[in-house]
Image (cartoon, rainbow, N blue to C red; front, side):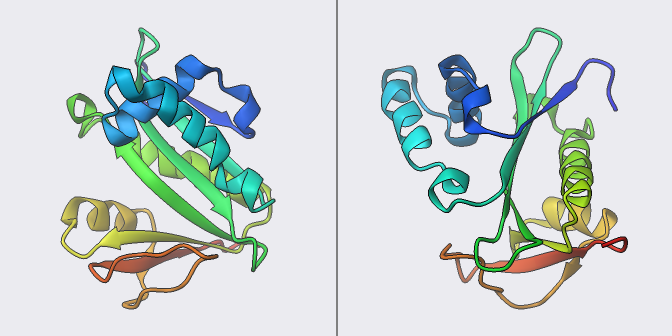
Length: 168
């Protein structure tokens, strides 16, 4: 892992303060300052893990001045235990090609493995070659179909990649 990047796993929504929510909102959706209060309120109200009463955690990457430079969330399927979802993987454009996405996914896979996960889905746009290459490198395989997950809706331009844990 890059010595200038640190990674934190947030296992509950209550571990983050509003400043952390704001930094995540800016990275995930490029939220403008004047809309941050409403976005933070929406994030807290629509926390899928809390609302669906399922396991959920986030992996956040910080640079050496505590700016958030990478993010993803991981959620267990409320309808099928031990089956997980990797969502909203995002890395700041100034930090691309520094293995941040790789490290976020690896840390997520490790955390899920500790919780006896059996598999994890990642939904990738069919044209996103960088993400496809990364997922394949990490052991995901293309199911060549759009597999359902909870009540989430995915686009026709996406396909499901799956990672199967060998130890569980």
